Image 1 (tube, rainbow, N blue to C red):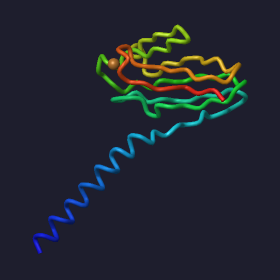
Image 2: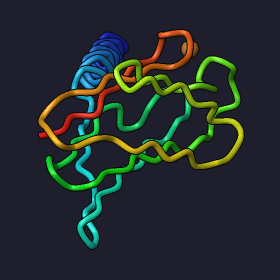
Image 3: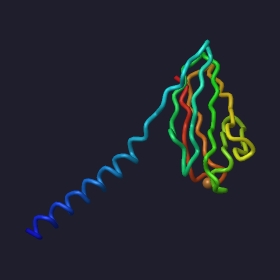
Length: 123
Ligand SMILES: [Cu+2]
């Protein structure tokens, strides 16, 4: 009886570990919301970026909002190297960054220390 219980616990543990890693690898990409020919997407900053990938439609003016809920120094800045953007997210709750959508391309962003990463895909 004890043996069966141990096996069940072991199986649960294994499934949890698989789920944990699987969940980490399939980061959900979120699409922007398009209203009146403008698109916006919101990324929550809290121990990382959620979602870490945002998809924008080409040709529609776009803004990405960073919703700051983290108090660590690590995530206090967001850097879009290709855009020359380095913003302090701690000054206000929501920080808006305009993303050029004139052509299909991917913009990578990271925290100020280049530890957390995300991307904005224009397609
Ligand atoms: Cu960092």
